[in-house]
Image (cartoon, rainbow, N blue to C red):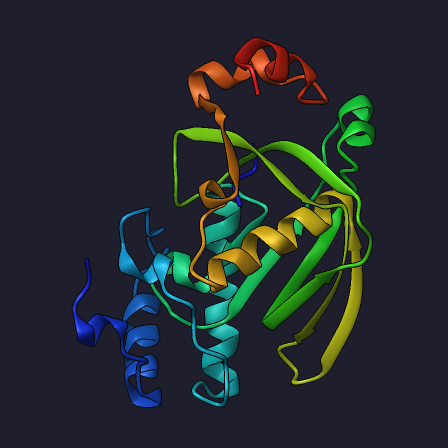
Length: 218
C-alpha cells in the first residue's frame, strides 16, 4: 500500500525448489524492483508459506521487503509485489503529523509487523471510505470502502500463530496487503468515480472524502 493472459505454466504453483530459486534471484538485487499492474503474479493467489524457505532465507526476504517498502515509500508491501508468489507481507506506518487527519482517518501508528499466511474477518459491520494508493499501481488513488475493525490470524516469522485485532488505518493496511496475497488490487474494490491521478488528488486531500464525493459525484 502506498504512503499517500498467462500460460498454463504461469498459473501452476511453483515447486519449493523453484520458489527458492526465484527468491534468491530477486534477493540478488540491492533493492528488488516493485512489480506493477499487468504482471500475472499480482493476479494469482499466492502460495501458503509451508517450509519452502529456511530461516535465513526467510529473514533475508523480510529484510529486503522492508527496505523496498521504506524506499518506495509505503506502509505495506506483499511478496507478490516483488515477484514472489508467497503469502508474506510487511506492514509499518508512522502515522501522520496532522492530528485532524489522524483523527478523521483513524490513522494510528502501526509498528513493523510481518504477517505470514494471513486471513481476516470483519469484527463489526462498520466500514470506512478513504482514498488509497498502491505501489503496484503508481500515479493514481481511489476511494475504497473497507471494514473499520477486523480480526486477523497469521503466523509470525518465528512460527508462532497469532490472532490479533486491528482497527482504523492499520486494519485498512492489513486488508489491502491481504488482498494482494489473494490476487486482488485495490482498484477491484474501489469506487471508480473517485479515481484521481496523483497530480489531481491534492484537491481532495481533506481529512475525509466528503468534498471528493460532492466534486466527483460518487
